[in-house]
Image (cartoon, rainbow, N blue to C red):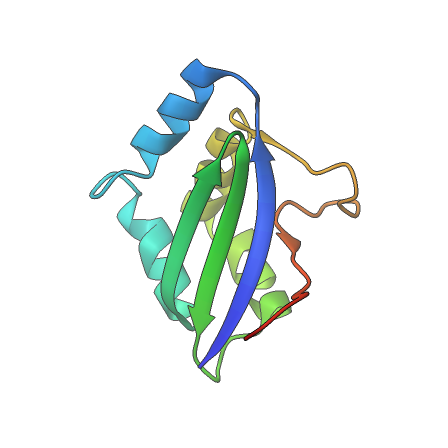
Amino acid sequence: MKKHYLALDLQDDPELIAQYKEYHAPGNVWPEVLQSLRDSGVVDMEIHLTGNRLFMVLEVDDTFDMERKARMDADNHKVQEWEELMMKFQKLLPWAQDGQKWVPMERVFKL
């Protein structure tokens, strides 16, 4: 299994951060979004928060492809609705490319 590590910021607003965390609490992520992740080859996913910075860890199977996932998301009305809702809370990283939300992280050390 392969892992992908990505980063994204939230708006620096404690109320918005609390709301974002509530949307991601167990049982609150929309089932269509979870199914979309599974259908794309995501086996496990974690999002961690420090301050207003998010870190995502995706564990994926051999069928996963980031571009394919993007196409699947674009064709899924409920995923697009979720992403639009989440943009209320999220703030793109200054170095993100046009249209890029979650930015891949570079490994700089491994024991």
